[in-house]
Every structure is written in C-alpha cells, then in structure tokens.
Image 1: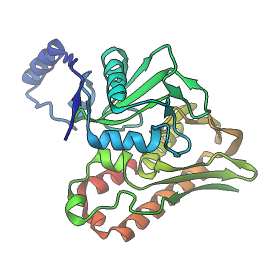
Image 2: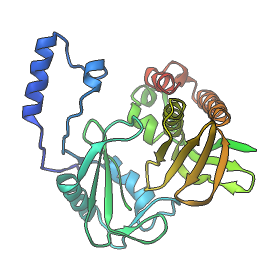
Image 3: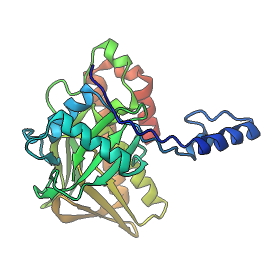
Image 4: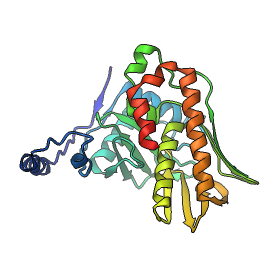
Length: 143
Length: 151
C-alpha cells in the first residue's frame, strides 16, 4: 500500500518531558482518556496519506466528483500534487485540535493561489487537512 | 413546525461484515459511517444539508455538545461540517434559538428545548435504524461509547 509520509514531525519533546515529570510527581499515568490527559494537547505535524485517504478525497473533492456541498480541487490534480499540497499544509499551516470532540487535528494553510473551488464554486486558495490520531489523513479539501 | 431529521444514504454506507465491524474506530464512526442528508426545516426556511455525505453520528454528537453549551448560558456556537467550510450557527436569546447556515438563505427560530427534543428523537431514531441494519452494533463498545458521550 503506498503511503506518502510528511517528513516534518515536530514533536514537542520539551513539552512531553515536562508532561512526564508531572505524571511522576502526581503518580498518575497520562493515559489517553484520563481526566489529566484530557487537559493537554500535543501538536504533532505528521500526516500519512494512505490509499483509503486518497479514495475518500477523490470521492468528495476531486474535480470529477459530483458530491455536493464539498470543495473541489482544481482540474489537473493528481495524487502526487495532492501529496505535495498536504505536505506543505501540514508543515507550514495552522494546527489545532479537531472540533466538536472529533478525534485528531486539523491543519489549515493558505497557498495564496487557487488550488480549487469552495462550495460556492468560487476560487479557493486554502486547504484544510484533517488527520486522525494515528497520523493518517482522514480528509483534505480546498475552501 | 421545526423538523430536525435525517436520510441515510443508500447502499452499503459504511456497513461492514462482522469481522470489519469489530475493527471500526471512533474515526470511522465520526467520518465514514452512517452518511446521509441532514434535514433541518421550519416552514419555508430550509437549512438542510442534502449532500449525501454528512456523517450523521458526528452531527448528533456535535449538535448535542452545542445544545449543552447553550443550556449552560453560552450565547453562540457554530457547527462545522466535516468535508467543507460550511457551518451551522446557533444563537440563543433567552429560550429562543436562531439557526442560520453559511450555505443557505434564511433563519429558523425555535425554542432551545424544542430543538433539543427534536435532536433527541433524531439520535434515538438513527441509533435504532443503524442497529436494525447491523445488529452487531448493539454490542460494539466504541459505537455505544459514542452515544453515551453524546447523551
């Protein structure tokens, strides 16, 4: 299975170090789901574009897709171009925890040039990439 | 008359065989499973998202979270859809709730309790429909945990 890994993991080692110290001091393991762990969020700029990711994006956001209410990439998009766009957005974009308690993180990046159209059919220069906790890309779309 | 409802997309729609079912995660349930249309109407105003791809479990969880915030005296909240920049905005004035969409004209005014009641019926109906289609879901830990978290 081809996987396109964004080679820009910027794990916040210092933050993790202090998090581990805190765990040691309090005697509590920082397991996901614990009350203590829920208060923290560690930014992690790793994104893996899998075949499943690509299929999901093609079905909704490819120029040939007829899925309504979803931004579309510009004509001429290829998997390689998509991979490059995702890579740049994850490397340089704004990252935040996913909304509404959804798992994972979102990355948003403005390319300052049209990369597709938004749901109104107007030129879109921004890309949102949604990445699961296991670092696989869930979806990516222009807006 | 406020209507908060759904239409599941035809076809397999995330349904899995028993082996696949066991491996479904919260990411699957919130992004890839039980897709369809969100129906949100009141009189002539139609803020429905009839896009076929709206993850309906995700909508229930997100909307219940927003209702919870509004019930705790928050004034405004927005629901972001998973596959676009489209949003539904919720603004409370007293017990009145005003709904607007970034993708449709018009505004729905209803009471917050009325919306919460319709959302609860949406949730119960959807869960029932999904378990009826795939009985293994009744005992699926992640699936059940998601509903508990939303309720």
